[in-house]
Amino acid sequence: MILDLLVNDYTSTLLKYRNFDSYTESVLLNNQLYFSSPKNFNDPIDCKIEIRYDLGSFESVYSKHLDFLIFSKPYLSLTERKNEATIMANRIMKNINNIELRKKLNEDIFNKIDNTIGICSFSSIIDSILLWSHYSNSHRGFCLKINYQVLYNELENLFEKSKIISYLIKKVNYVDKYLELNPYTTDDVLLQIQLFTTKMKCWEYENEYRILIPELVNSKINFSENIFDSIYLGANISSPDFNRVQKILKKRKNKLPLYLANINRGKIIFEQLKY
Image (cartoon, rainbow, N blue to C red; front, side, top):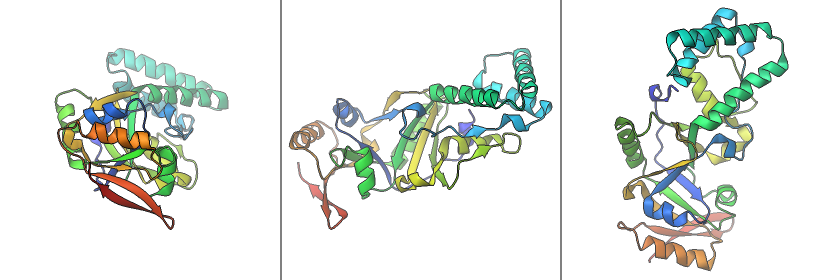
């Protein structure tokens, strides 16, 4: 992947909505973020924009696939990459009008993405009734405010120490109609941005930001205690979870500001609590 060549997007507010579950204590005490495979997302076409390899000539297909193999199979020799690129180009040109083959080629790409890219999703909106409903168990969960600068610095540190091979923080772009990508007229960097950070307009209410990390799928990273700035509890939190979260927070070395949501005349208002 070429993620290390891309520019990170900045936001002053980065929020992670969560449910209370068996991982809650570990998340809050170990300052964890989880990087999921796209196949676990609730949007079935997320990271699945069709790439129209059939629009190219033999030379353009060969060149594009040769470049792709540098990142997808870096262990191959130049001769092996050329052989594989030739096979792919011949396969595509032989079946250029075969819709089923085109579908199969894209499925192969989507499967590779599902198994090689870990994504952690965030929002920048704290007072959305829909977000609390959809991503925090109908207002029964909680939301963590992330310190962007700490997050960025620690990701950089992991990258410099080769703990991760690259990373990208990017805002999701929302479009009115489903895209098809022409890899022969779209720059490789732009193609990757579009592939991983494009969603349909109906998801725009999320105002989503993403961290993408190659080769870290369905895995967690423990950050420092300064990664979280504060924690917000949903308006419908249960008494057991309310008591549980306070007990967990008291175990932390640094004290997180704690807020409780209340819904008043259709708006979410937060009250800071002492614990």
